[in-house]
Image (cartoon, rainbow, N blue to C red; front, side, top):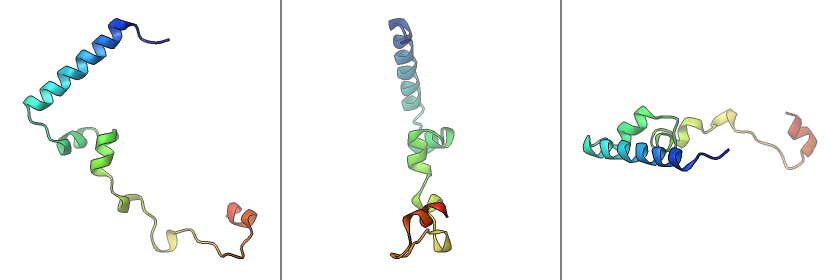
Length: 74
């Protein structure tokens, strides 16, 4: 089921009010990210490649002579 028009308008109004309040309070993107670390903006500002990148022995490596089936089973 899709939301009816009134529900969509309420969502739009709520988002508009939230944005206006954030601008009035001069909330920075960094402050927003701290409050919403799992959201898109939060992840973009808080998560760095080095946080999830494998290094050293954690990097998977295979030899050119390895069989695909053997590599997939590791």
